[in-house]
Length: 87
Image 1 (cartoon, helix red, strand yellow):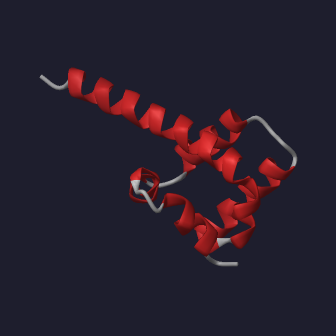
Image 2 (cartoon, one colour; image 1 turned 120 degrees about the vertical axis):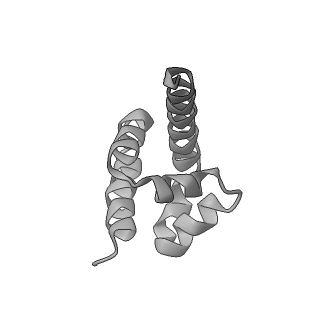
Image 3 (spheres, one colour; image 1 turned 135 degrees about the vertical axis):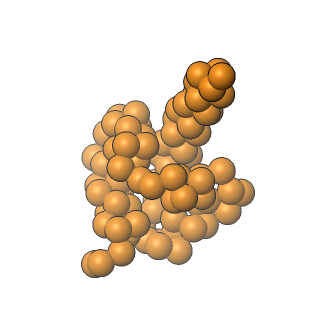
């Protein structure tokens, strides 16, 4: 399994299966995933992309939806902070 996205999804699926706190998964994603991949969460087809990488994700759609919402919130907060910090 050389694909880092698949590796990450394997970890996240394990977290979802164990019904771990979504915020923990969101923190893991937000801190370890590159900006280009994070941007995929803004796309309408974000979940289809996840399922195409690892079909097991389909079992945890609600968990991933909550994770996505949290990550997008942090992305928005960071973008606003960066915008106000620029002279």
